[in-house]
View (tube, rainbow, N blue to C red):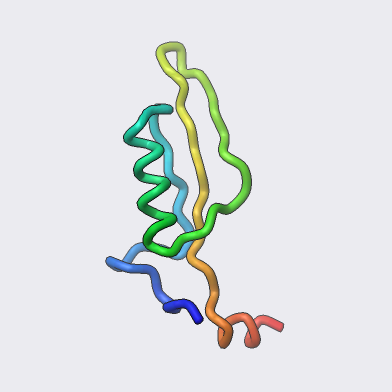
Length: 70
């Protein structure tokens, strides 16, 4: 069973964005370590200077929340 609320008053859905660098990868890794799940595929674009990436993460629903949805 998962904790039903994300840590540090963070939202259930987050879109992490930034330059495609080590710091961005660390932010995504940190979110996964906190308990978030990846949501969808990452996106990437070039802004004329560098590659900008985005990855959505969501906080998983606990068993009680899942049963209420069905």
